[in-house]
Image (cartoon, rainbow, N blue to C red; front, side):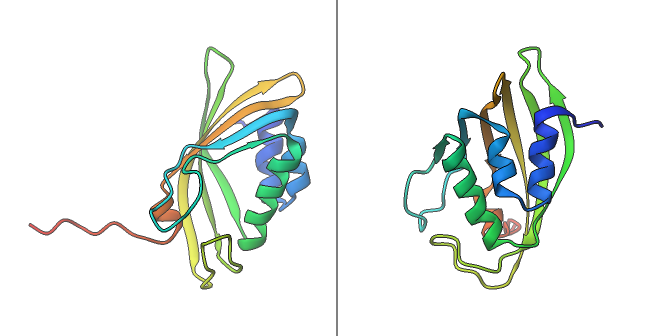
Length: 146
């Protein structure tokens, strides 16, 4: 698997813990949205959307500060006929600082997700991220009792 171009730079910036470099991968009016449903105890828009480099950078900065040792590994990627890039990734780290209503307890964080990127002439024009929020918050599914 070879990850190249702007999407490779974006994931490298995550692993370098460099929010401004992450934001710089987006077009000036780029959009990053989460297609994740927040659990009921988390207030706000269930599908947050960040528009522009500054908003994208700030949200990534907050996330990186809360998981200062995070690592993102890309395990699969594909480019569609419409030039979108699809990636499957796994994020691991330690939740060290509160992130909004998500209180830090020093617990390990380990979850997987999918991101879809639409590159444009000025950088990433649109990115959509999918992951299971319950796994991110440390809830583990229970086996069904039969």
